[in-house]
Amino acid sequence: MTTDALEQRIRVLPESVINQIAAGEVVLRPASVVKELGENAIDAGAFHISFWTERGGKDLIQVSDDGVGMSPIDAELCFERHATSKISSAKDLYHLLTKGFRGEALASIAAVADVHLFTRRHQDMLGTHVHMAFGKKLLVEPYRCAAGTTLTVQKLFYRLPVRRKSLRSDVTEHRHNLQEFFRLAYPHPDRHFRYHHNGVLLFDLPATSLRERILALHPEVQPEDLVPVDETTPFFQVQGFLVLPEATPTQNKDGFLFINQRYIRHAGLQQALMQVYKPFFRGEQRPLYWLFLTIDPSQVDVNVTPSKTEVRLLKEMEIRAMLYSIVRKAVALGRLTPSIDWIEKSTESISSLPTENSIASSANALVQEPRIVETPLSPTVNECMVLYGRYAVLRKEEEVWLIDISRAYQRILYEQYLREIPVSSQGLLFPVHASVSPEQAAKLAELISDLERVGLRVEIREGKEAVLHSIPVGLAPAIGGVLLEEVIRLAGEDLPADWRPRIALNMARYGAPRPPYKLSAEAVDALWNDLMACTDSMRTPTGKPIRFLLTEGLLERLFG
Ligand code: ADP
Ligand code: MG
Image (cartoon, rainbow, N blue to C red):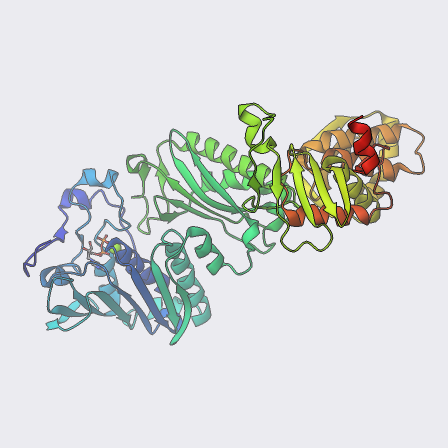
């Protein structure tokens, strides 16, 4: 970069390009100013960006950044209409990577407000102060200021009483301002944002990861509710997070979609996302997600409306279909993850031991290797180890027990389902359908409220079809079909008095997490304690052994 004070980066666009730019009102309300100034700061490569607003932006909107700043010439030029440093020809419109490109924002803002610009390039000793008011340049002077740019906007719409009157209450305008602030803060977690209103620092968001940025802006979202999305397709790449249907705040109104780091609205894409969630929602609830699509800029037309929030996608149908299946998969997988506490989330505490008799061949080797787990502060179990991903060997004082983990789960879940009524349920992404005879339908109809209490929501359609809509929380959706079959079989029999244990048994059998298990010492300890709390901790509901005590006698017999 040159230190030439006359350096001019901003040019007024030729008429031919201007005519190709979506024309219209840029400044509709204070939030438009918040958005445009914030975008300029990001385009200027700023790392620290601070916002100040007063009375919902009606009295003041100020944005300060430590970006590249402007030369004295550019400081004046930036207020010209169609003056921009970001594009120079029409073909640049198809390679946009900056937020701005129309060179209209500052001109429009300066036309309807009292504006002060303070700017200095990092290589310059002195900066520039420009004062514009309602379209007139009132002052240009050299100015001692920090490197970067500060724009101060006051008296918005003072000369336009009708406009000013059409503004909503301070609170409402403030809400719109914050909304724009959020939309800038999500896609740039690597930059430090601050937001002050009426002198109070409301948000201080140091540079961080996307996940942390989302959590900082959404105290209502629990970290474990964020399901990551990261897929690459031939047409685009998508990354981000979504909140599973059951964890979505009921009052949620908005998901957040970004293309090339720009917040956008796109009815087609939003509809595709809504389609995934629709079966779970009632009323006006909307899905909550932060999805960032990266698409070749030549395939995206942002030059549709002045606010640049509507976009046109050249490959809309393809992108829509792919996005739908990506999100559907993410939701289904996210819901599959067992939500049972004692399954460890990370396996870091497990160290694998090399084995002499290497059991498994390549693919399974990692998960099936016997693993030893040190017990740090296990109150019940003194030492334990998971073998072949299926059995736990644990020492309790002088006793050594061998446990079939899968069977232990079955017993624990079985008793839990029997005990915990009503059972909380989760909606199925794909409800299960089965045809039934009129008699079965009639009997099922009688059972409906009982079934609901064990977490199964069944609907009878036209007396000939049974539809299973939800299953107990924690069960894999895949077992829906098995459960519905069992329910129908039960309805066919002469309603045995104890149908509940049979349902519970099926849930336990098919719903238990599958091997291989990777359990931490705490998880094994919890498993043991849960098992001990069962009415029968030795056998599964169908009578198979769950655990053996490795007695001296047993070992003697083993060795003959
Ligand atoms: P656009 O962003 O579409 O180019 P604007 O009217 O928003 O149009 O800004 C005009 C020009 O002023 C920009 O192209 C840029 O060169 C310069 N500019 C505006 N804000 C800043 C800033 N915060 N830091 C550095 N340069 C800026
Ligand atoms: Mg701009």
